[in-house]
Image 1 (tube, rainbow, N blue to C red):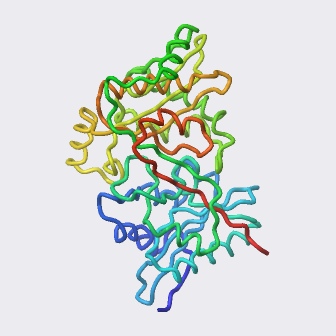
Image 2: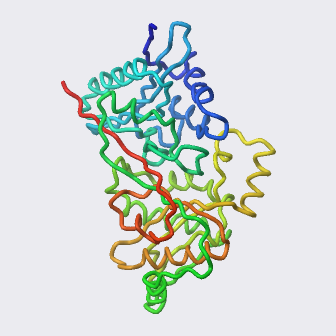
Image 3: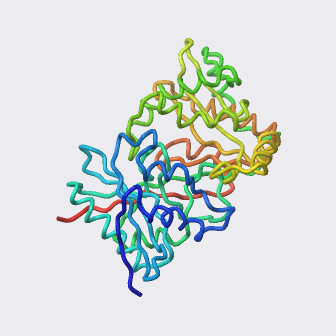
Length: 358
């Protein structure tokens, strides 16, 4: 079979072919594509587009049917290029052409390495799932089960691992004294761990930003953005959350930690919402079947606060009596092992990289 690999411009006829490939690859319940966001990235109109340049890549068969696709992202003064929005049939020949084209383009921009999957930015989506495939949870990087093989066959090596812990419903009788004692201790020391409400959530989100830009700056693929951009990207959470499952920690009236969980809406919140989707969101928010613990950040100078906040969330989960997922924890982070006795199983995700030869 003969294949053609190409790059294309933002007003090209190939835009729709690029956007259509995930629809062919995934069952409706597994497709995590955000078409509007993808189109904004491709056209350079996304709120973060001013930070980078993108090169969309597409592999077509002789009938001009899309087989593989990706976007190479270049940041000024960064010797690393980022490859994301990767989708492909299980076709080593086609994907190899795609990777080769991306690598040649990266070299033209004087890049010495490619890291992926990274969908243009740390703030959008990155990482590749390696196990436990099925209906994805909200916020999960999701892909076909053969993608890791395609990346590795093209010479990419795993550089980082991440894990999500699945917890079954927690019995009301469960107690871990290390965590419950830590929560009580922190309260006695003057820490306040509280949930925002609808009126205070916007202010809490700004406090999360101030913490996050310091706590996450050493993470792989991290790039700073402004507070206004952060608020624009994450204000979508407001109508989705149950406020009891969001915790902010304060010490001497200063924010020192956050823990953000949302009901698991699956992929309902992606794409164009129908009236049925809106109804599903309303019902899920009112009576969730599972929670996703998406974001956690603790000022490192406040020793033991992470366990205290995890205990506060665990107590909320005990009241609700439903399962949860502790999402996307870096392999070396201590919170990966919180409440290990309650972990049902682990999902694994990876980042890969390849050093480019001249």
